[in-house]
Length: 376
Image (cartoon, rainbow, N blue to C red; front, side, top):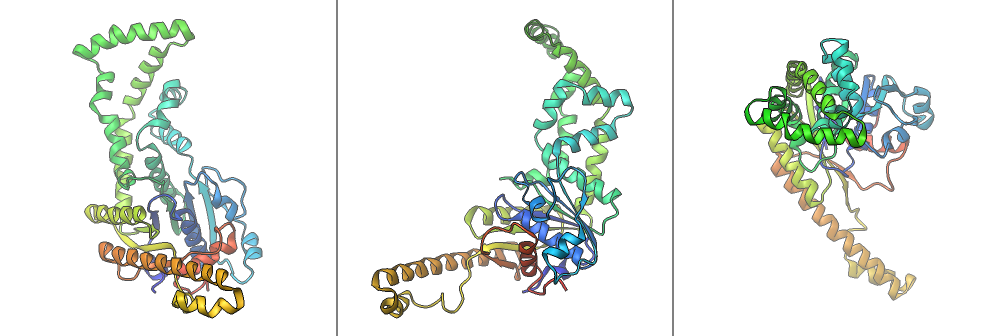
């Protein structure tokens, strides 16, 4: 099995994609840890509500800016693995990232304050379709441009639709350039009458009930946002260019179950269509058999009957049979992935004992990602 080191040579951005629940976060952290151990200055960006990455790296809850992992902590947890580079980690806060982007793109302080202090914006910025995905790639772009890192590993948002990530820049730009928004910005005809009559009545009632003039909030927000459209368009184009850059590559993580396999195939298809680089496939949590586990269940029962008794020996044999069926299905899923993704040599990670919850666990996982070459 070929490890990731050769595939990632010369790459500055590694985007780890796949469906939710397949181990993207731990794979991202393990990969970043391995690259840092090899001498690179690495930042890993995660979108993980369980905060497992911070726990695994021995950090307090991560924030929206990278924090350096103490090399002494890494050395104490894994005394045989010298940390020759630097490992930085952060947990994406989509709202904070979106707010920071607004602040950067605003033409002046007044516009910035009008948007960020607006009550409608506070709700809208968290609800815009694609804002989390766009925030992820926007943060990636910022770190790539300003951070001075040798490599950045991005753990993508879990999503049922792989297009959510690849299409995020276009969909967000479409929102700001869309017909509905333009009608609000410059209402004409029936839209003007609706804004002037029906909507005004509704907002008037709300003002009486709540004391809040929402119509003023809407008017101020839309006027301010109109000055940001060009900036959003330019930033979205820059983000798309980074995703298509030869120094950017995508790793797809899947598990051998039906839905993750289907999404991995779909995502690989979309990468081909978009002309984006595919760095490799990681199949995680695979049931693998050693020589003893591949034995005939009937023979296992016969061999253990005298020692364990027939009832217990039968249970062991039944478990062995189930494991063999699972391993067979997993092998078939891997073959399907090889063919559909045109990936003859995927990285296969077996089911590990327990969840990866600390640096030692990340090191074990990285050794599989590196092709059992370890960190040296």
